[in-house]
Image (cartoon, rainbow, N blue to C red; front, side, top):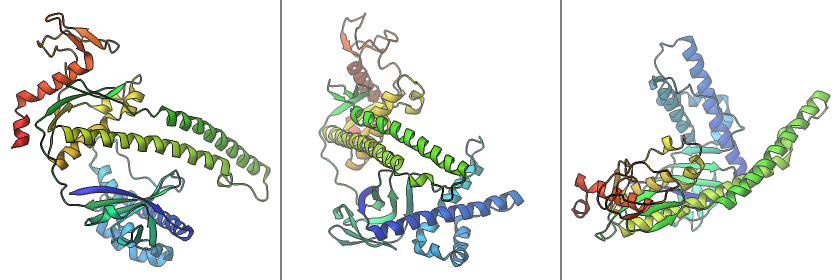
Length: 394
């Protein structure tokens, strides 16, 4: 099975310069190939489509013309052709017209990366040997034991930190022991997961980091605007040595600090979700959740921010692959009427505003917590399908 592994890299100054060159080479090859394909398409739209193998054949003369391309891992340039080919396929296959033609890449992109398929070797406890970079210090190498690396991506994030992302083939993880328990989960905003047994797990609170990121976003916007004005002023005055936007360090510093706070919030949210989902998979054999269309819910501008912060989509994705890894069962059911039906007698009391968190069934007089009642109904919905505890044990 395939698994993603992410490691921190600590390149020295020489390696940082090499990485900058390799990022630029990928961008250069993309733009050169795209310009050629655009011209070919404009001249004759009936010409056969150029696949990745034909584009790879063009790399050899391109390297002769531009020797600096030899500084890159050759497999990374092939991956660029693969991505470009896929972009063109998406453009031709999309009949709706929503997918446009591939665009040229600009050096102004904040995120820089390149992807390769060459062999990476473990050189020590905290060192790796990466093609064209040599020995490079990393955060850990223990996670790379007994795995087969399919692809790797070296990236420079807006925070100024370097990371190595690996797509690796690993052995199937050991199945967790069965507990004989099943649970229904209703997701919410104040509480991320409300279980049918009455337990509630709060949503991650990233307000501190968001507040800091907003403050530095304002500083970044203001500083960059002032720098642009000074650059324009030099241009209008026809100064002998005009300043460039990159020569102003203040706005770049604000940009990095803002990105660091955003990264802290994202990393802590992901860590919280990992711990919560692992706990649920260990505790229950059958987990029943709502089949929510998060993309549609985000169109509600009053709740979009809260829903994004709760990370319902990431929560479900983690549950899906962890249940698959550890031999547990995840069932998604239609959320229709789960908040309206009484879990005791089945009476549908109709729609209720979001501010109503507790209600009493007019038929059986049972007092309900809105979210717990919904979680119980979600669990009940899975039972008629025959996908219950027996299927997990089988």
